[in-house]
Length: 319
Length: 276
Image 1: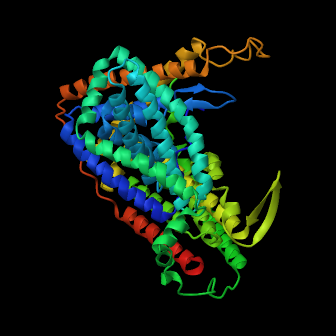
Image 2: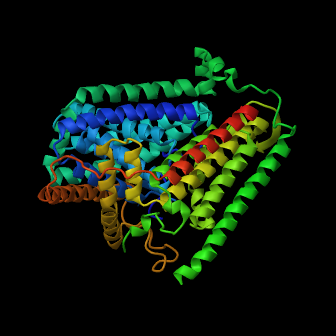
């Protein structure tokens, strides 16, 4: 199978509605900022360039290499896009990639799309930008500087993004923080190595063939780069510090909520109108489920009959 | 070999296919939201939600087995939710000894786990029907209608247009690599007991080769985008993204939209009143 789902894409059902909604709001704000910056900084080539590069990142995710025992390393592309396009354009490109994956290929949910955009297109891109610029500055003009900073940016972007995903799962009560964070972090610390190596290899080829593109990317990164650098630093540090803290408290959400008194507010009595009461006239949950099943079967049977009927009446026309 | 099989859209003469894409997108999102809002353990709500999505699958004439098979895509992620079986406090149901440890499955833990799986499975089915019954240009129109910024919609559109071209490019790169023995083992036909050992270098070497492929894919895409820009400029593109005005939504589609949303709202309320 050429198009395999990636472990970082959270499907629907795994995030609670409040977490999903908050993630959507953050994603919308950052995308709006990115749209504003990109339409100001880039010229009219932006639309074809970003569209084609989104397709390129999507296709690039099909490139893989065997590691051992049937597992393979592949590219997620946040770091590569951030390095070559500058952070704001990369946010839009990755948003498009993640959006198409969710909308067309069901790789990641639609309600969870906000969280997936946040993890990959925002955390991944910002952290990669931050790491790349920092390491570049540290190593100076050395020839191996570009691939090494590419490797670190690739690894860190995948690792930190997976911590964000694990925290979202923990906050949703889907996976306890003390298991989700080490598990997700551990797996992605390994996946990140593949990402880092591919990013470094790609940068080596691009440095050799079109060094001007790398310089362009750096110029893009320099425009409003301080905001991104600080943002990346805060995200990376924040997630790296919060995650071990949260995993010390098995039920991360309950702990945070208890600390802040959210718990009482969250369990407000709005819907507790009818206590100890399951269905009007039905006192048994099993019976309610059976009734729902019968109703559901009736709906499905009705639709199936209707479709069968219309098909039969359609056939004479087409033949 | 071309990658056009990647496109999940399957044209059928069904009611679902004919429904306005904007209504479909909003209803699918509302359905997934309603599924996410269903409280854990509210089994009648899950049964009714499943009946709804199943009815939509039959109506869409896509083939129920096809949709159900594709719906397994999110299954591996269930691993992430597995620990809740043991960590949600509550009366013990079953104790599994694993080596020196004993893991206790609790009643509420099992309830939450099954609820998460059901939610995920039901939501992904609706997403599959949406993607398989709506052509991408219609989805773009629907995105414009729900106020996705025009620039972003334009990027989506261009990405879709060149996705298959570049996926073909990636396939060619993969084929070129296989031809030059980047595989970990020789093909089984030539070397059934794998006695010749590994070919194609170390893991780091393979990663570097893949990186080279990603780099050339990027360069080719970049150059292609230059040509596309030149072609667009030659046809009068001036940086402004223009689009046709959206056609009006028919009264029937409005009816379906309002009916569907209120049905889902009632179902959600029903779940909260009795199980919230």
